Every structure is written in C-alpha cells, then in structure tokens.
Length: 271
Image (cartoon, rainbow, N blue to C red; front, side, top):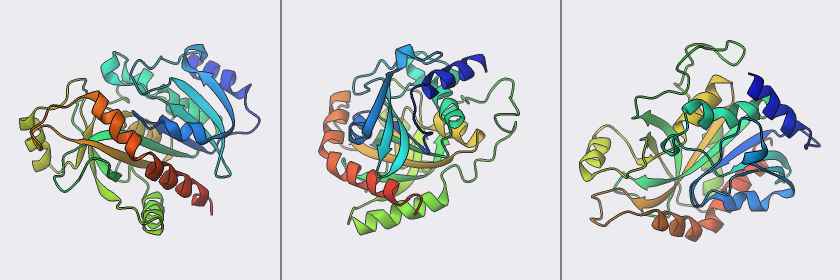
C-alpha cells in the first residue's frame, strides 16, 4: 500500500486531469501511445515501485494525455512474469491506474494463433481467457479496500465494450475475430503437442501476458476490453520456427488497422 500511494502521488503531480481509460500496449503495439495528444511521458524507472520493461518492442514508459477526446494513461510496454517479476509487480500498474481514476482498461497483446481459421495480422476480440499457468496475482493476503477475496470472472471482459468493439469493426469493415486467449508463462514458445492440447480445451490464441492484469483489473472493479493481434500461427500449424522478430514485423503490418480500431472505440466509449 505504501508503494501504491507513493507511485500514485508521484504520477498525480504531473497530471492536469485524471485519466478515464487505461491502455496496456503489447509487443509491437506501442505506436498507439504515439498518437496521444499533449503527452506527459514518465519512464518506468523513475516511478516508485514500478519494475522496468526488458523486452524488445516495449518502450518502458507511461504516456498520459488525450486520445479521441478521452483522457487516457497508456503503458507503452508491459511487464511479464517470464522476466522474473512476481505477479504483484507485473500487475502493480493496474492498481495505480485505479487509484488515478481510471474506470476502463483496454489490454492489448501480440498472440499466437491457435485457431486454424486465423491468419497472421488478424485482430481478435478476447471474449474469455484460460489461465494455463497455475499462478494467480491475487494469491496471498487480500486487501478488502482493493477488492473482494473471491472475485467473479464470469464476465472478465465487459460485454458492453465487446459489443461496441464489434460495431466499430463492422463500421470500419475490419475482419474482427473473436476468441479465447490462453496465458502461458513463457518465455519459450509452446510445443506443437501443447498447441494441440490448447485447441482441444477451447483456446483460440496463446500468449505470455494479459491474464494477470485482467484478473487484477476485475479485482479493483475496472471494466476490461481485450484485443489480440495474431502475430504468427502457433507451433506446429504451419511447420515453421517461431521468433520474436516475426511478432514485431506482423504488428507493424497491421499498424493502421489497429490504430483506427482502438481510436474509434475510444471515441465512442462515452457516447
């Protein structure tokens, strides 16, 4: 709680108004933060209690300002469990966002396509998730001021925001996929046998992030919208090796669609 208060106070000193929407931008998707008007940029390493992002494609800073008329706070790069951080550290920024006044959280990621009808470059609306790690960021003592001991995740991803996203995709003529996101710890990519297992249990995309942030967001009462960029097909589907460079290349190719999609949703979120 002390770190939470210190981080919140540090950021508040640099704000002219409270942010209403939080954005967590995944690998290769940080370009959305470059669209923010009148930006205040704060490097993670100067914020009390914040870890430091170590992954290529993650700029490692908060960008705060206006986007489509909405006051936003964006994480231009996130933290991952595989970097060696505990899940309390990985999810700490979400709790800070709540303290700053954020009401809605948009989480984005680059993910491997498990559903064989998907193609690299597709955008997928996350309708639900599978936590395949055996880990949970809420393990340990519960702070009842933050949220209840046993949070309900039956609507982890807000249905109204999903409906809005679908309407926007239709308006923009985007081929928006929908599906279930599976969280694995990483940093290794999955084996072909693991992907076959995930297909059988109902996974449509797989990645190494997002789920812990969503769990904490729901714990503190934020409405969540989740979007995956299908950056590659998962192991064994196309019989080719996987690498992070391909992830970054694919997210760059869908840059314009991703920007138009999220910005249009933001412009309508309070309409």
